[in-house]
Image (cartoon, rainbow, N blue to C red; front, top):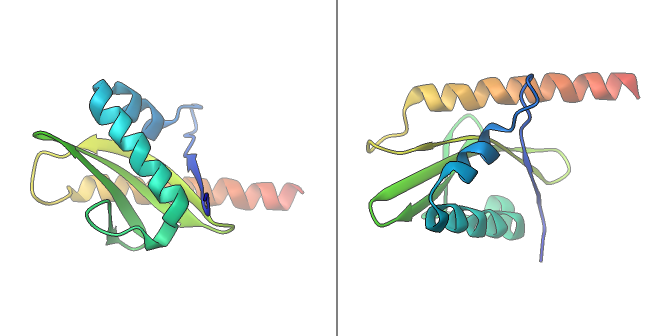
Length: 122
């Protein structure tokens, strides 16, 4: 049963970086990412390793592997059981690159600023 609402972050240009990344993957890897996102919708913050991992300051990653390919999609939680997927990348090293975590934090700041403006306007 769906407990959380998984959403794609929209950047200032109207693009959805996480969705574009997932759709750029080969069919098997993309399908496995979408299956893992369904698990995230069902389990939210209860989804644990090996499917999900907390990285830093409220930024998490969905972890998917098919053969030697490792895909990561970063996300954060928001009020109202919302999960916001920021972007994805193909993991090539043991550790998640700090630049990817920083990008997720920047997208979160952008998202929160827009949400605050929406609240002011309503």
